[in-house]
Image (cartoon, rainbow, N blue to C red; front, side, top):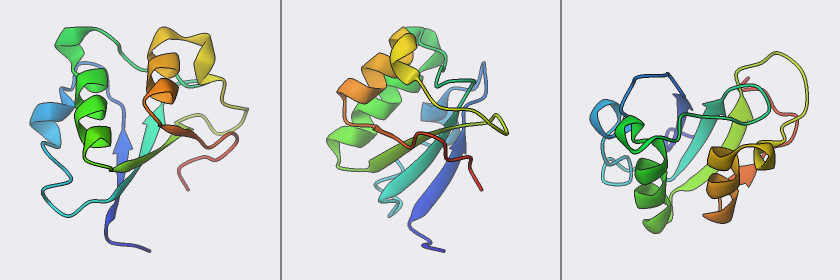
Length: 99
C-alpha cells in the first residue's frame, strides 16, 4: 500500500474542505474517491466536493473515481457532478470497488 494515497468516501453533508483540508500539503499524491451508484456525488457549492476536487487536481493530486456499491459499472457522465469530475481529469476506474 502506498501511504501517499488516500481513500475518500463521499459522505452527504460532509464538507471535504473541513474534513480533509489540503491533502496535497499533507503529502497525499493520489486519492480513491468513493462516489455513489454509477458515479454521483453532491454538487452544490455548499457541499464543497467539486470546489475541493478542483483545488486538489490543480495541485496535481491524482484522483480515481470508484463507487461505494458492491457491483456494477461506473457511468459518472450520467450526472453533472460526475461529468465535471471527468472534465477536470478525475479518472474513471470503471468497475473498481474501493477494495
